[in-house]
Length: 373
Figure 1 (spheres, rainbow, N blue to C red):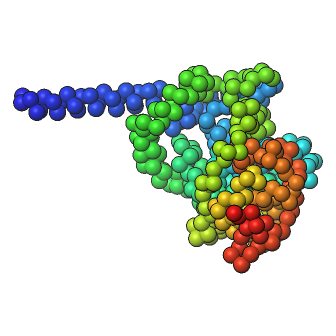
Figure 2 (tube, rainbow, N blue to C red; figure 1 turned 90 degrees about the vertical axis):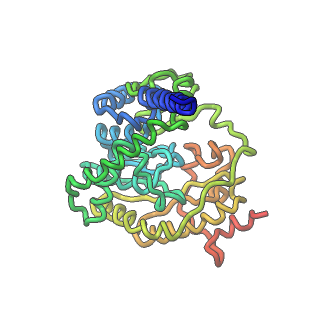
Figure 3 (spheres, rainbow, N blue to C red; figure 1 turned 90 degrees about the horizontal axis):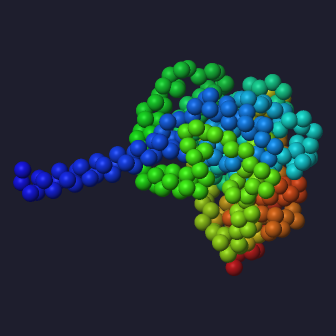
């Protein structure tokens, strides 16, 4: 064997060992359940342990699997659907619409969007006793595609899309089979993914092995403040460190509402909301405000176009639209919006009400425009 071929062989062996090590670690830890999926038995046990934990359980990054299992195990009268921005909505924080609810689940998920709403709405509408659904809307909500984030449960997204696209006819099994190649490709992509390796190692180092495939629900004490805590109503309590993020750390890079993409996906949203109403379930749309500092951001000013569009959709559906991007008309202070200036604290939701903003010729809120330097 020539020296060049020997070096090439060593290089290939080194690469194989490196990739094999990454794949082994990612597969053995798999904090988000991307590779090995979610064990139904383990998830059922997680939900049972969560329901019994008086102070909640330590956060694990499997939000969609947890919330779907929570909905299936403990169906409620009232629900909230959306992103982490609506964490904190509950009967006592939005009493006008949820105050009389005997049971409640907040089904928010990280970066929650239309696909998540479709999945949850389909299950809620088929659950007896459901009567109110609050939907938290962010500027990415209708335009974003979050099917990938359902991981091995992405079949749920395919079933929900087909259900609402086909006049509520039960989709055929072929819809699920068509997603198999996508799931295989996603699994392989994460198996040798360096970023996922870093996430696996960091989370295990910080939080222990309950982030692994065991899906263990770790009960916490009343003084626990090491990481976010899940509660049985679906809400999460933040740590002191998360609540103390300084205003100077807020960023204006909040993304932009894309009217063209949103217009293509809007019919599915309208169908899902209309179907819930046809099942005698009240629908309430909520726009969560941002920290006053962020109202100067060009992206937030642009995203007030989204706010105007939501109010149009609400008027067409005949449902209330509560809140808005600008916190000042509601008397919400900077101290009541934490976590990067985008997450209202529970007390802020009680101040939200229906509000019709004044828009300029470009569709931007005049109140936000006035704050532009």
